[in-house]
Length: 318
Image (cartoon, rainbow, N blue to C red):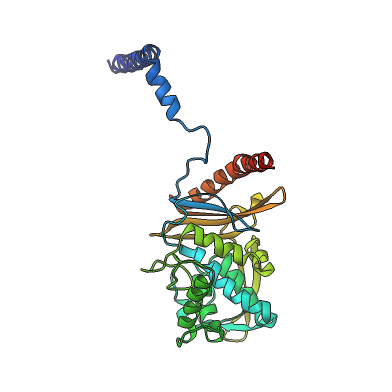
């Protein structure tokens, strides 16, 4: 009885699908206009479908916008914030390279910072040059606080604030100098906080500016980095950091990942092709994996279609 019932169920299911497919075929055969309407609604050119809420691509040399969507929408930057943090330190190092050899003493405040971490503990010491890798590879929130505390008082800005708070003020002053009207920083790491905002267009400018510093380019392109830290008892231990940017094995040049609950998944990336270098920002992708898929799909379109169209237009104009 059970076997017969199963056979009858399979027969009914198969028959049902057969009638559905036959009906659909007859409908589209007898209603060609409807079928054509659906075909015309499909987009066979232009940028690919992506999950991110905003994106932009700019030329690294000129700063000119190549393409984008919602590029000026104000959103949260998450850990892409650390591009500005690292940039301020390396800008100081351009004038005084010796600061990269200075030792940072990790405070309890730095150690207790939540989220992604470089894994340095209270009382441990690490060189500035090494800690920048801990900032930009594993996206150490603790490293950003330690660097802000270490350098805040040395930054020449129009502010009476001290230490950590002075570093944040310097981040905002630099944003103004770069013309980033929609960017404001409340911390050096990017954890969600009211008023800590940016746009894809503004982040592209930060990336373009930071990538002009050779040491910054070197760090963000590094897949993994190992160093030693001094423990409070005088002994040493080894730490190793892995870059969170999964595009690096495919030949991309950095720049920075980001994720928080409110910002969702973000990625700033850099690519070179045929003598051109471009920077891309995607904000608020649907997942950590999606930010890489969104970016790679957009990169394929940029290099295979958008840039070819630009070349053709330039050639026709000449």
